[in-house]
Amino acid sequence: MAFVYIPNGAIMQDWTPEKTGADYDFKSILQPLEHLSDNLSVLSGLAQHNGKALGDGPGDHARAASTFLTGVHPKKTDGADIHVGISVDQVAAQKMGHKTRFASLELGTEPGRLAGSCDSGYSCAYSNSISWRSPTTPNPPEINPRLVFERLFGDIRAGETSQARARRLRQEESSLDIVQQDTKKLQRTLGATDRRKLDEYLDGIREIERRISSDENQSAQLPLDLEKPAGIPVEFSDHMEIMFDLMTVALQTDMTRIVTFMIGREGSNRTYREIGVPDPHHGLTHHRKDQEKIDKISKINRFHAGQFSYLLEKMRSVSDGDGTLLDNSMVVYGSSLGDGNRHTHHDLPVLLAGRAGGTVKAGRHLVYPENTPLNNLFLSMLDRLDIPTETLGDSSGKLEHLSGL
Image (cartoon, rainbow, N blue to C red):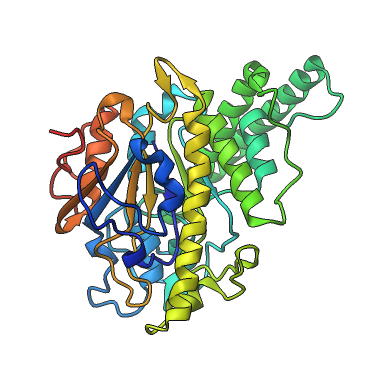
């Protein structure tokens, strides 16, 4: 399963279909996805209640990103004592991550800080991450395609023989052994907080060890049609496409089965000159009913949907068992902000693509009672991965009607 996050909400009147059921219509924002309607479900009425202030005042963008996959109200702090909840992708990663080379993959397109204040007294970690390994540990996304490539396929160096590469990997692994020994000695001298931080560091070292060991045997998985990227492309659309290519390859080769992707960090002020919108995105969302600004936001929303269609087309083109990679996947696309002007956290823009191996009946617009928890969808997704979970964040039960019953 995968989750693709869009920042700053959406112009919902240009998103939400008028009709329900299978014969639904495509408003302007979602029109780039119309040719994929048989693989798509539009889900209306979902909410993330814990994205609301609940007495904490401003900070809706930080709360939007941090609640999107957790459903937990974040602690308002710009210090090191961040706290929210474990995200649905990491619930799955902890249960099934051992089956793949990488338990999960976190991707994005915009750099972001993990310290300091980014939104009205909330830590930047909240705005810049949707994946949370634990309530206090975000998984920040990697935005550089070259580094993602090297993580997936190893540091493949021009002219290096397989024997030379194996020797280099063994040297790296022996260096990690020394690091492990030194940190064990250090651990005995630390207080509880520092020990926790060191444990997190050691977890990272263990993951690197596992990667190096796996690298020795799996470098042959390099797809012949995917070249090593040079870095971050200048054009945003090129950046998105190469990241979606890498995401598809990671799922196709079963390097991971769980991916999160942030099209932009929450509160993003990216400009979109390539589609004729030179204004900062976040600034536009405070439109105060200015139709010109509303039209520009809608244009950005439509552009993002077009980029998402590229991902779905790639996944649909990959054979997987008796169907396609998209047939056997669940891909959520959306935000934990509805109306970016009013900072609402109900009636969210949410799509579910794919058929989950035939357990999801796609091709419909489903309307749920107002304020139905978004996390109910996530419980239903975990069920389809054979990871039965009683509760997640503010969930109130599993989401009905996804199977068509």
